[in-house]
Each structure stands twice: as structure tokens, then as C-alpha cells.
Image 1 (tube, rainbow, N blue to C red):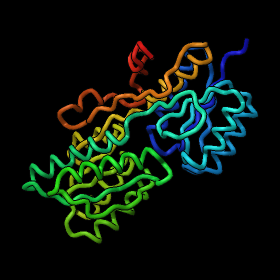
Image 2 (tube, rainbow, N blue to C red; image 1 turned 90 degrees about the vertical axis):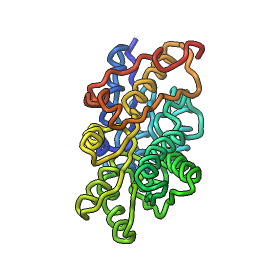
Image 3 (cartoon, rainbow, N blue to C red; image 1 turned 60 degrees about the vertical axis):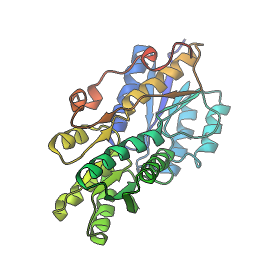
Image 4 (cartoon, rainbow, N blue to C red; image 1 turned 90 degrees about the horizontal axis):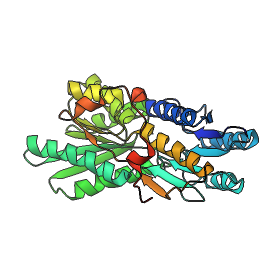
Length: 303
């Protein structure tokens, strides 16, 4: 009998988090004697290219799929095609509706809220209970980004002295976020804090602040190595360990379990801890070198 072949779909090759996700899928598959095929759009986050890659995976005769959709709505018909082919599909990171084995991710609203609370606490401590925040939101087609922004807005609503004065789309990438932050700095004479929906955009904000000779507390999400270094140096206040490595590892384990006839819950949420200067030590190991979690470490025994 041929070993299982797992198709792994990620959105781009720009974000180091996806490098870690692909490495995790490879490691977990190899442990089980399976192999992986990676499908990544050449144009970052391109829906049309991802649709073509789904057709390639179906033609290749893969036996399972770990799927990070570029757009949770536009890719629905493609998820239907994968399911119609009898393939177990684990959706990971970006939640979407449709026929699937499981969703593996995190509570993005809670994560967006947690890093916003860390930012707000810093501003309230150093700003006399008041502060002006700008936001760099992610790609509108990414449900992860939309949910994180909801968490930010909930946190701001909980603190009347904190004002969300403006927001821009940073497309979850460094260069667009830098350009968006340049616009915000030109428009607003006072910015006390910058909330971003991922670390790549936080880096763009840090770049823009440095170029403008201005200072503001910056928070991100992902726990990327550069974010850890920025937190240690003081260029960023905090991030969250939204670990694409851990999430992809569990998504791959879920597909392998189904192929082996073992049960898999319909949703698996991987914990994401806050990273700040007080907790930074455990995240100094490069993301790609961190161990992949076992099934039992994440999924309750009752599942």
C-alpha cells in the first residue's frame, strides 16, 4: 500500500510563519511514514492561483489535505471539490465554512483582544489613563484578520480613555504596512500606540516610526523571531504566540488520524500566549526549530 500523500496549502512564501508551518507538516508526515506536497501561490495570497493549485492537487491523487485558504468565501467551491473527492481536509489558521474534517487554529478574537489589552495597559500606565491608537488591519478576505480586529475594537470599547483614531489595511505584509503607517504618521501628529494584526505588519510600523523619528508602542501577533528581538530591544511592546508551526502540526496529525481510522474533533483551538519582556525567554529558540506538539498535548483525551 502506498504511503499517504498530504497536500499542504499555504498562502505565501513571504511570511516566516508559513515556513514554520510547512516544516511542521513535513516533520509530522515523516514521523508517520507519509509525504507532503506543498502548494503555494507565486503571487502572495492570490485566490486564482490557489484555485489552480487545488486542481493540481486533485490531479496528483493526494490522500489528504491541510488547507490554509487565501479567501474563506472565494475558496468555498474549491473546498467542496476536495470534499467531493473523498479527501479529509483540515482547515488551518483561517477558518472557513464548508465540508471539512476539522478546523485547527486559535481564538483570533481573543488574541486580538489580548494584545490590544497589553497595548492599552501600557498607554494607561504611561499616559495618565489616556491614549491614541492606530490599527494596521490584515487582508479583508482573511477571516483571521477580521476576527483579530474585532478583538481590538472590543478592548478599546472597554476603556473610555483610549481612542482608536484611525486604521489602514496593511495586507499582512511588511512593505504595504510600512506604506500605510507612513500615511498615518503624516496624518496624525500624535500616535501613542500601534495595534497590528500580525508581526509582519508590526515590522512595517516599526520601520516607518524609525524613519520618521517618532515613537509609539507597537504590538503584533505571531511570535516571529524578529518580533522577539524587537520586544527585547524595546522596538515592540508585545506579540502573541499564534504558532503556525503548532497549528500546522496538529492539522497534519488530524488528517493522518482520520486516514488511520481514528477520531478527530470538529474544532481544535491551539493556545496562544502573550509574549512581552517578562516572558520572552522561552521564545528565543527560532520558530522553525521549536518542537512540534503531540496530539495529546493539544487535544483533550475526551475528544
